[in-house]
Length: 144
Image (cartoon, rainbow, N blue to C red; front, side):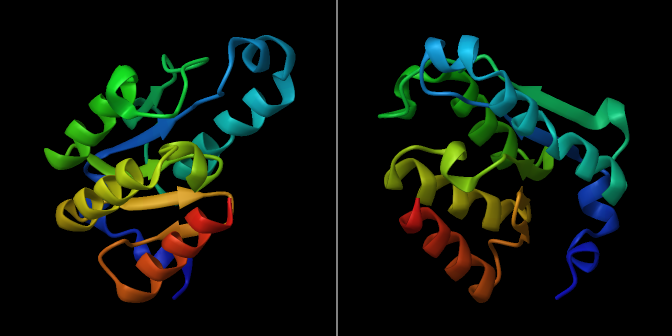
C-alpha cells in the first residue's frame, strides 16, 4: 500500500509524536549528526499533512538507558497519549529507538493498533492494526 494512503483524515486530526532518544549523554553531546537525523521525521509528517503545531517532540529521555521504560517518563507519556488517541502517528528514526526491549515494544505496538495510530520510521509508515505491517514491525525489531 502506498504510504500516503495509510494516512487518513482522522490521523491528521490528532498529533504527530516524534520520539527522540540516544542511549548515553556522551552520544547526545558527541553525535550531533545522529540528533539531526532523529529530528528529520518532522519534515515527513508535515509532508503527509500534519501542521507544525501538531507535532509533539518528545526528547527528554536523552541519555537514559533503554533497559526498561520504568525510568523513561517520556516513553510512558508517549504510550499514555497513544492510548488516549491523542496521537495519529508515532515517529522515530528507527523503530528500535521507540522501545529498547521487546516487552515495551510489543505493548506500544498493541496500543497503537487498538488506538488506530500509525508508526513512521526511516523505512516507511506502518499500520500496526494490519497483519503485514505488524509482521514487518516485528521483523524490524528483531533485526536491530
